[in-house]
Length: 341
Image (cartoon, rainbow, N blue to C red; front, side):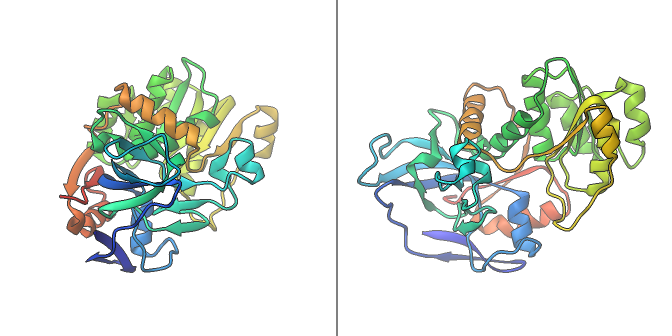
């Protein structure tokens, strides 16, 4: 089978290797679509430490072509979305339903304690507990189940109440999925802060009520004039200064969600008195749980989330480096790779 392998920073090699055989509790899945994520880009640039060579790719869907001896719930020909996060199911976090915080987490092509080869390949062996049936949903849409599942897990952290006012900083693919999910979950007013005009336009198209360019307008001035105090602020770019900025917009009882991936050594300033006196919260979200993944698939199968608008570029495996280059230049939105093209 063909794979796109990272052999070093900024180096992708397309090659052939033996097709894997599924273990007793695994499925062999033909990968028909795989989205390119910022995590893949960090692996490509070397800003995220990985052991080269490795096959990235963790936002995928495909067709089951073989099943292990102990598998009874799936058969060849089934169409599935793949959850790349494989928990140990034995630690305290797993037993409490927070598998995303598993201390011994394994990821198929993503970031975790243990990383194994992912889905920028024609086939992948996947534990049977890590797939969800997608019915007749097209593979490109189903490949959004993983990033949407991460958004579902994030929204779970903020206890959103219908009618609340939300600010989202960042309108990349994740920010735009969050906007749609917030609308689906009952947010009242949604404001998006994003410097790229095309992304602001898409944000309005998929559900934002107001957009602003933070390089031209100060959100700390404009947002209060637009909507008053903010109930929920979501930082979806991973910039510490932006976390501080959006957190300052929240009022008493407000919650700030850190969704973007900040540098590991970054720090921010905040007022502990405000947290105490105004019961304001600062919370994080990481990855997804099996439950969040299953709910994401349900949302996609029922047409609650528009992903057609988000896919701007499509590639065969050979185009993965071009996809990375476009992402570094902030060109377009979601890049989709088709390993069998």
